[in-house]
Amino acid sequence: MIAAKHSVTVNDRAYRWMDRPLIVICVDGSEPDYITQAIRAGAAPYLQEMCGKGTSLLADAVVPSFTNPNNLSIVTGVPPAVHGICGNYFYDRETGTEVMMTDPAYLRAGTILAGFSHAGAKVVVITAKDKLCRLLGHQLENGICFSAEKADQTTMAVNGVDDALALSGMVLPAVYSSQLSEFVFAAGLKLMATQRPDIMYLSTTDYVQHKDAPGTPGANAFYSMLDAYLRQLDALGATIALTADHGMNAKTDAKGDPNIIFLQDALDEWIGKNAARVILPITDPYVAHHGALGSFATAYLPAGVQAGNIVTRLAALPGVEAAYERAAGCRRFELPEDRMGDVIIVAERHSVLGTTRDRHDLSGLEVPLRSHGGTAEKTVPMLFNRRAVGIDFSRRLRNFDIFDIALNRLQ
Image: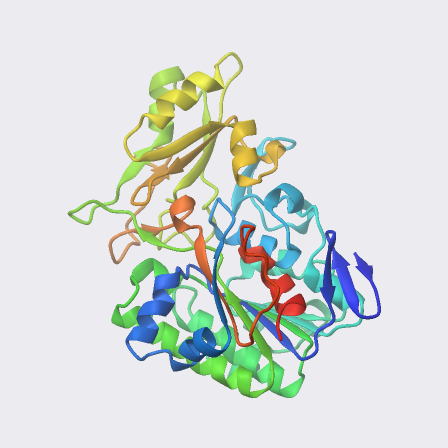
C-alpha cells in the first residue's frame, strides 16, 4: 500500500483522498429488485432520490456469490484470485482440514480501509455478523471495528471503542433478526454524528432476504428502515455508496420444496464411498436460514480419477448449470487455484448444491428455501448519492469498483 498526499494506492489502484466523509454500504443479499419494489411501494423515498439525482448502476458480484469473498473484494478492489478469500469455508490443503475463512492469515492483499488508515484517515468498520470483523479490520490503524453480534463485548484495545452497544440505543439484537442490520446503521449514524470518520464501511446480514422476496411486506419494511438511516447520513454531509455482496433467489420447486442436488451422494455412487470430498463454500456459523445449501460447490477427487469425466457427468445432472475443471473454473470466476478443488460446480437459478441427503438440517427453515452462490445471484445494485462522471461502460462493472467510483468518479 502506497500513500501519497492526495491519494492512496492499494493493490495497484489509486484512490483520491475523500473530499467529505465516505460511507460504503454492503447490503447483504440485496438483489436489485428489492430496491425497485420498495421504491414502487413508496417505502424508500430516499433510495428513489439516489436513483434520480445521484447515480444508479448495476454491477457483477464475485462468484461464488457469498458473503466473505465479496466483502473482501469490495474492500480490496480486486477479485479472490488476488486477495485469496474464495468462500466462507474451504478445505485447507496444507493442514488437511476444513475451516472457516475468517482468519486474516488467509488474506493475500491489503485492504483499502487499512491503506487509508495508514495514511492518516479515521476509519470505522461495523458488521452485522462477527465472522467478518477480523478480515475487514485487518491492519486497521487507530480505527474502530466491531460487529453488531458482539457489540456488548467491545473494548478500546481490541475494537477501538468501549461498549459499542451503547452507540445504538438498542438492546443487543438476536443474530437471526432484522434488528442485527438495523444496529449497524444506528451505530454508524451515531459515530458519524459524533466522531465524523473519513471512511465508514457498513455490512449487514441477509436474514430478511433469506426469508422475504422482493416486494413483500417484510422486505419493504427492511428497506424502509434502511432508507430512513440513509437520509440521516446524507443530512450529515456524507457521500453514500451502496452495493451488495450477492442477490437471492428461491431455490424450490412448484410445491415449495427445496431443489437440492446432493453431490457427495452422486460422487459416492460413481467412484466409491467418501473417495471424493465435496466442499460447500456457503457454510458458516449461521446456517439456520439456508441449511448450508448454496448454488456453488467444489469437489476434491482421489488420485487416478479423471476430472474431465467427472465434470461431464456433473454437468449432466438436473439442476446443474455448469461444471468445470479447476483451472478453467478459476479462470472463469477469478479464483485462487490452490484453494479450490479439482472440479467446480454451479447450480441453476432455482437449485442448490448439497453433500449427502442426511447431512443437511433444514429444520430451522421457517419459509421456503431462498439462497445464493451461483451466477444467477451475481447482479447487484450500485447506488451513489452524487453524480458519477467518466465511468468506462465498455468494461464490466464489478461491485468491487465501488471505492474507485466513490472516490475517483463522483462530482
